[in-house]
Image 1: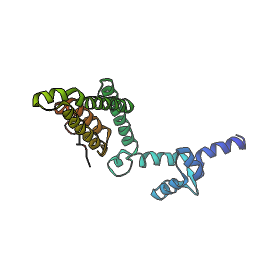
Image 2: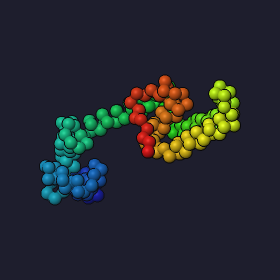
Image 3: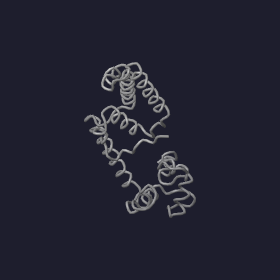
Image 4: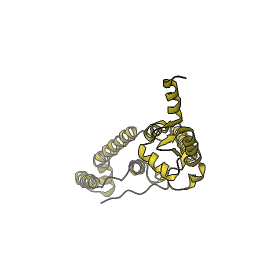
Length: 195
């Protein structure tokens, strides 16, 4: 065996702390911590096979899954499986139409607002003659009074503090356009906060 081959074989058996850190994908500082915890050394260098066995037995063991911190490889696999399950559940609910894209929701709310504003704006001209006839009052005065009421309503709506979340905004839009019967889309939705 020539010197070059012998050197390669030796480098596989024993290497510097920095090289071993690179081998297992940690920082040299983490290697120093592991040495204090008992990582075996061959003098000032790391015996690769002994160190790898020690790391497998002491660092990635499942017994620390219940302790604070990341919990090791087993806990990481559990977290990954849970994340995948949540992602699949979200996809199923999205396909079922239970979720709505944020921009679609905003566009829908704006459309509903325009419908409501249009109906409220038309209310005085549409209903003033009917109300005036029933009450026996002048239709122009009735229309003026209804116009003032609608204008005050628009002013009040302009002073409303925006809801804290899109969910609250959607609930308000459903309630405003369909009444209280449809407001229980989700019973746990918080009520909107007004000024």
